[in-house]
Length: 168
Image: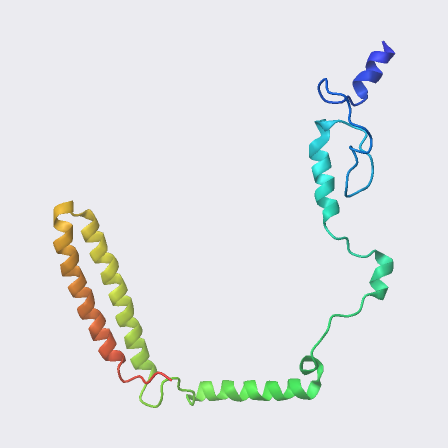
């Protein structure tokens, strides 16, 4: 009776195939022979995946690791102060209105107007597409052509409103 219990607890080789020699059963990453059959292949895969990753050095290796390379402009106090002054100056110019991306003739109001026209054109495009999508197949071609004309007219209007902006 005890022999049966021991046999149940001990791992058995898979099916009726003879067990391969010990050298063929070695785990290549660990160098140890596996004393069990293929029923634990998931366990082997897990070990293999873990061991394939490079291991960080142990606690003793931490003392020998060098600090990450830092650029001098990040650690030099005078450079940091100079960058800070430049950024503060840029911020002041922005708040005072001195910064202009498109020249003197372009105001915030004009850019907001252009943005509103772009949004209007996008909404029109989606609305017209929704209408055409609900039409029967025979009417789609004519409606699509009409909608294209409407969209092109709106796009031309948008383009002419942007004309004064000089892109640099």
